[in-house]
Image 1: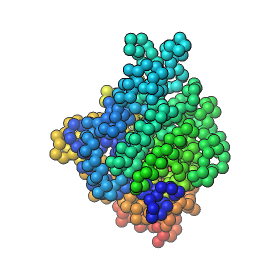
Image 2: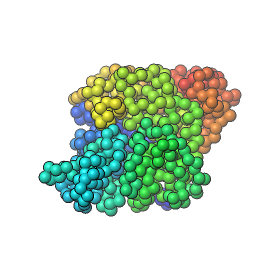
Image 3: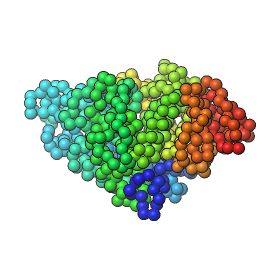
Length: 600
Ligand code: BGC
């Protein structure tokens, strides 16, 4: 690891994040501490012993800041306040103190691409005239076909579409009620994009970083990290804007040879994925974003302890993503190639290989992610007829997953990801094997993508359902003991009952116990800091994925026939539900199962 900012005396590569297992808490759905049906920071504090026992190293909290909640908090009205829904700054401080006391690091979410339209700056912008410094903090433009210089126009300034559906521009109304300029929002109309060419915007976000660093945050998950800078002139673009799925099939241009870790000129960097039809998007992965992360890197280095940033950047190919983690930028980036590979041995093997190589070329650790709050849970995706598909949510009249098959595969995929060197991210509830809620009624749905596309996209509510803690309690114990329970903000499916944490705790073969065992094994064997080499048994064309990490052989069977346990090896952990006493006698790895093996 070539991080120049490791505190003196700490050997390179020993930063906590290099091999950390980070647990994503989606605060509104994790645990409700005050009984209002919405998760909160007190709930997180109450459940920290559970996370410590699970064996994770850090917690990443999705936004809990003051917000009208138009996009579940990714629309921030005040970056320095906790929304009353989630508690107060004192609750945050208490949670952080308790996490640190238990040896857990805390990563907070930073949303720098856009604010809420209820942020003081946007209100000031609306009250100020075109061309004013207040409007310059955002991306306001006159429309097309207007009287030149009037700031008016009947058509949006360009043809960009919002990632959430509909146009990416909305028109404001002047003080006299007449139609005025247009503002850009790559997401919801209530999420106006900031203008990152504006010095005040840059200074404000530095100050927001310092605010949370001063309070003791160990790092930031940077939202839409690839989107902050837009191409000059905001040219029209014919592509389909998408963060996660629906990205047009891309043809990759050959990449020039990778450069030395740390050294970089943006002009010489690997080519971006280019569609056969569309040129690269003018609003994602622009070279200018890297200046921002170099700047933030310097801010983080002012602090003692190794604070970190992880990029949420849906960027292809892996070499382009690696640029976000060069030695003077961020420390990690989510590896979405791995997530998108699905339950498919060849695609998974390819994703592992290319992402390890790309990360190594810049001296950064790889990350491994299977689920998050924007994607259909992997337990459910892997139970679909095509287990490498990536639906935008699942509704009652869509194909329903085979729950048992999906769970077996999800457990097997998790053992693969936790044995790979680098850092792993878990999404709350995956340790319980929770499925997506695939039959949520339309009137319960809250995701703006559902509403902006008039239901054409089901959206992300199905993976955001409040967690079940106790089978025999109202709301499956989502509200922690002592508080009267209101209904959870999204209804929970019946399938959550038997999967509640109290039903799995101490139960051999349960998913919770599998995660605990896998995390303990990973830590004892230091797999996160280990080495990687494909094993002799590796045969992705037959569905077998096999690799060595130090003295451990990992064999995942994604195929259609049992795979023999290689001679001289014994199973020490299996993703199956058979009792541990059976492992030593196993001579075959069943389909949809992963095992860890050591030499006899
Ligand atoms: C977050 C989403 C959010 C979007 C806009 C992301 O990628 O993960 O949940 O809707 O950014 O902030």
